Structure formats: structure tokens, C-alpha cells
Image 1 (tube, rainbow, N blue to C red):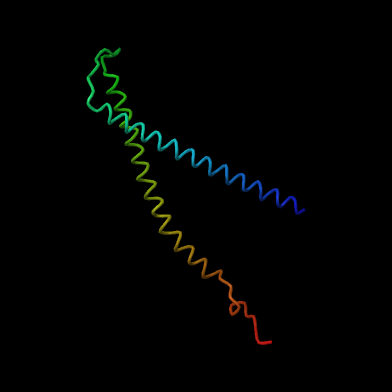
Image 2 (tube, rainbow, N blue to C red):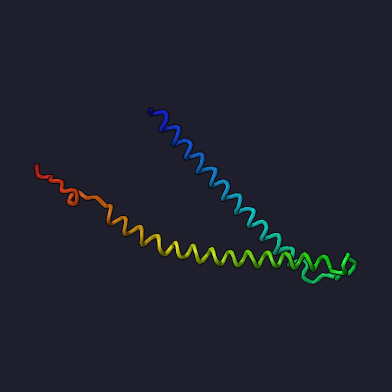
Length: 116
């Protein structure tokens, strides 16, 4: 029976490590996409127009518009997540202190006599 508990604990540790690795990779992709989009916008801001496209549109302008739209949507999502995280950081400490006071066991609370 002792081996089963150890196996489950090891499985949980592997699961936690996998979750952390996934979160780290998502953060890395997010940062890379943001930096590459911003770099593209800054390097091609003052470009010469190429009106030779199939519809007469400038391909660089189309790509700039797409990159700006991506950056705008990312910034809106970041602002929303900042508000949500801020709310969690306000609520969680209040909840934790309430649980801490309720579940804190002392000898007096357990009514243990120490006068042998």
C-alpha cells in the first residue's frame, strides 16, 4: 500500500511539472508574437507603397494592419486579465485570513490542560 501512495504523489509531481512547462511555453510564444509584431510595425512604418498586388492593395499595408490588429487585441486581453488578476489579488488575501483564523488550532482552543 505504501508504494501506491508514493506512485500517486510522483504522478502529481509530473502533472504539476507538465502544467508549468505548458504555461512557460505559452508565455514564451505570447512574448515572441508580441515582440515580432511590434518589431514589424516599427520597421515598416514608413515604407514605399507597392501597388502591384492583385487587387492593387499594398501588401505591406495589409500586413501592417494585421499586425496592428493583433497587437490591439492582445492589449485588450492583457487589460482584461490585469483587472481579473487584480480582483483575485484583492479577494484571496481576505479569504485566506478568514480561513486562517477559523482553522487555527491552539492548546487553549483544543482545551488541553498542561498542569500535570
